[in-house]
Image 1 (cartoon, one colour):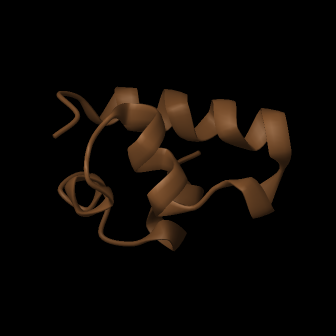
Image 2: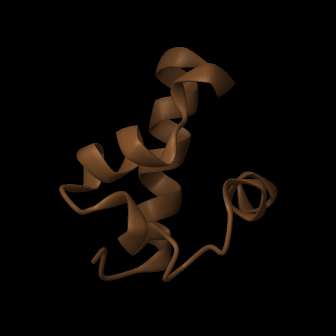
Length: 54
């Protein structure tokens, strides 16, 4: 699991910068963080909540 919420946000912002909204999937974000996508839900209950935090 990502150690900090900020790690998830940093990687999400990076994905958005590189490929726009279509590039930000929980699966791709999990790959970037080297975790299962389900681990991201420990910090954000949904992709919409993650996007609101960005």
